[in-house]
Length: 224
Image 1 (tube, rainbow, N blue to C red):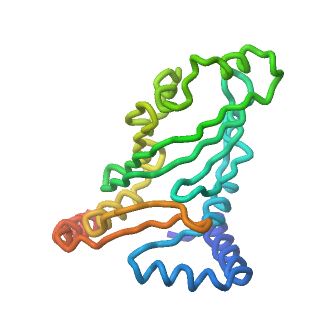
Image 2 (tube, one colour):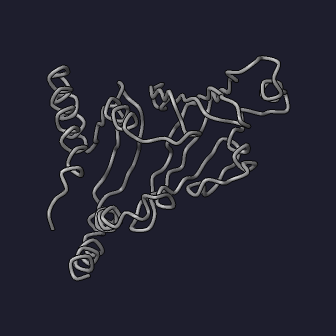
């Protein structure tokens, strides 16, 4: 099957951006190598920012996204649409658990320091609602249960805890991703995922007992 040139644009631009990043940050290789020696993967947040800048958003999607860190949590800010008006939303996100398999990519997230600031008139109904003492932002996950259209990835939301399964989004239709997860997940356990020095650090451990399962999954994919 011929390779479409359009399908190569993102990988080529990613490689180019990666080389430019390393030229500007030569110490990055040392930082990554140090973590790799301790079975940790260090992903620069600039990579996440670069990818987010290339994700298409709809008319009511996220805009002006800012990703930062307040170790061990990630910080996230964005302009969102709420009740037909624009709101600046922000929060600290601590990823407590990652579970992955051929049919799931589940994240358990704790939310804190949630902020909702209306960008419209200060005397609007939305501004009044956001200032109401009845709006308990110390338990922000509860608010997700009142959304008129529940996001497909949302599995559970209670108090400050949110459970997401990314395979319930369009990612779940990606056959290649499902193949990779079915082979990798028996071999690797994600122990921790945290922010550190403008990096997302993923601590992992090998699972020798999963070799048989991984080989079976690989054989199944090869023969299918």
